[in-house]
Length: 407
Image 1 (spheres, rainbow, N blue to C red):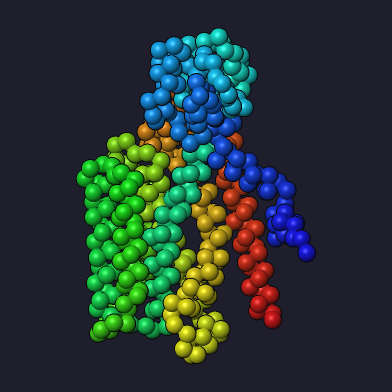
Image 2: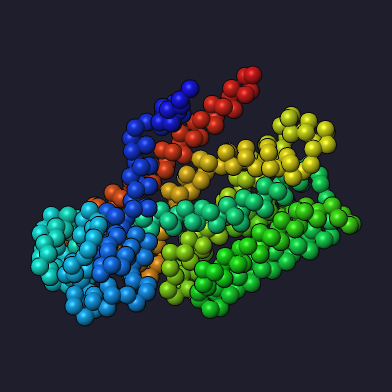
């Protein structure tokens, strides 16, 4: 029997408008360079192939790079290609054109012999707002999804394990506590390195995350080796959440934005993910306690199933399913937070494209209504889509819980 994927999605409450919105966000997030840009997606120049689908510049020293500087004056359209695939629109969001600053929407301009239509107008330095909104959607989705991933990494994984072990009154060995302490030291060292040197490379950040995950795995693996110690780590999590949430999230970000001079998307996503992790911890703790008290979990414990088996097959999948609405709402909050920070002139560097940056630029020229309307609609589009996804998932979970109670 062939299963229709879209029919199964609609049966869960997702109507055509939500499905269409998700598809548009997916296309803008992964295929922004195919939609608009001044560089070819794929080309063959003098028997050499080049692709700019992921890269924005030429990595190797080939004939294209040489002729682009000597003949074409860094204009890709002036070269003769053996084979070339261009984006749908030729507007480049990073191209500066000071002679056409504050241009109104749907104005046709000519530069280097090419005519371009500024569908959404331009900003103070002549950058195209239409292509900027496409790339702004891409950067907003990348930042929010990466921040959610970091918050899950540091908030969900340790909390669900420790809350479950505490709910069934498990004790931890001394070796396990040593690994947990070492993981905390690596995490503190990573933050101290960022605060001291104002930046960190992506490979170094990945290494630190892998080391923290490895130490947490070893702590769980050797939790029963040696002398057991009783420590109410769950109560420590609760006190930490109370202390953390007593200070507004914006205050933390203002302090970190002053320390880190030129943060990129990855750095901002990491900072937001760390600051959003306590919120994930709060809900994870609540959902883990509820799942741990269910009858079939208690039956598995009584039958002698291992903690790793119960966590892997029952607790973590069900708690993660309970968290899906929270994650959808979290993406909305992260997008609004990043836009608010850029509107205040904080966050990513000036050269990075952001929807909030366009709103910030509109303050210097209030008559440029297009700098408010179009980026604002894009922000609304993202937040409304994920808000509706979170609302539908929340209703679906409530319906499932009511059915389980009735049965």
